[in-house]
Image (tube, rainbow, N blue to C red):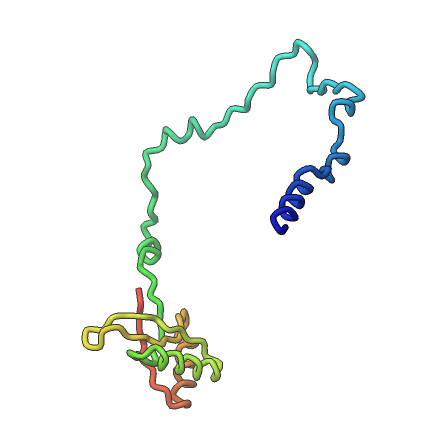
Amino acid sequence: MLGAVFAAGVAWYLTRANPFAGHEPDTASGVTEPLKPRVLPGKPGDKPLEKPEFDFYKILPKGDGTVDIPADGKAAEAAKPIEKLYLQVGAFEDPTEADNLKARLALMGVEASVQRGESATAGTVQRVRVGPFTRLDDLNRIRAELARAGIESNLVRVK
């Protein structure tokens, strides 16, 4: 009995009318007017517009590829690698200790970061650093705040 009901349901599902059959637009009878040709600039028989000629194609091959360096030494200063100054306030084997110190610094209003590094004696360490600083005045001000809170800090230069 259950099989007969199931078979009747499948037969009804397959033979019922498509609900979307009446809603399809009839594209063949929808064409009412032919397309108009596109109007192009210019007149028939005119010469096509010439492409603009650029000078840099002629200028570039003439160069010898060298760069002029000023003799006053400013280029040497610009080529000097920039050092980043950090205050390292701790190095821990346990990452949770590093996160705790970072949170303590955040409560003081000091933004710190935890950097993972390798140590020759301790293996993997989590370094808690404040910075980078571009001005020594800012570095000394933060260092004084940390000292008042009882947090020891060391200056670290990173290239």
